[in-house]
Length: 186
Image 1 (cartoon, rainbow, N blue to C red):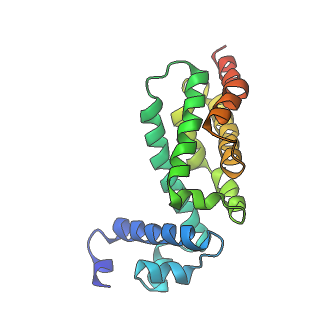
Image 2 (cartoon, rainbow, N blue to C red):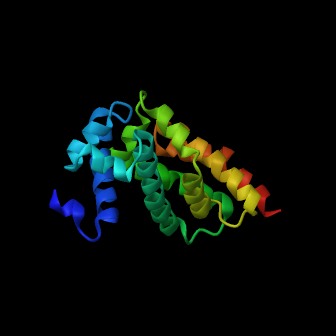
């Protein structure tokens, strides 16, 4: 327990707690994971856990925000060379879907029993900002936020009720989402 008292404890302790919580979310489900479980898995006391996160919802929110920043950065890098706004949006959504689906710690949030939590947290500002920054490109500020909120709903929908395969999802996105971005340039 002495490493909890080190000089860089705040950042590393919070990361350690979030890593432990992530493993538990994947193993037990997001809704079934309790603060005591997280403290035990992180190797700290409940009191220490509560110094960093005042509630289970705070742990969940911090985990999702961290994941959104990481995915947002990865998606931004992946779609950086795409100039067409509609193609950029489609590529960004598909890249987001692939990233979440490939990570067992993230896809756990979209199981039937936990999808409600994911939907609620997905509408928080940091998640929206990560999507807006990576996918919506040069849409006007107000439009970028609305588009990001709408895209978040589309992404969550496809994660909870996927298409038959990526080709079908791509076809749907090209038909129904890409045209929305053509109108943002006017």
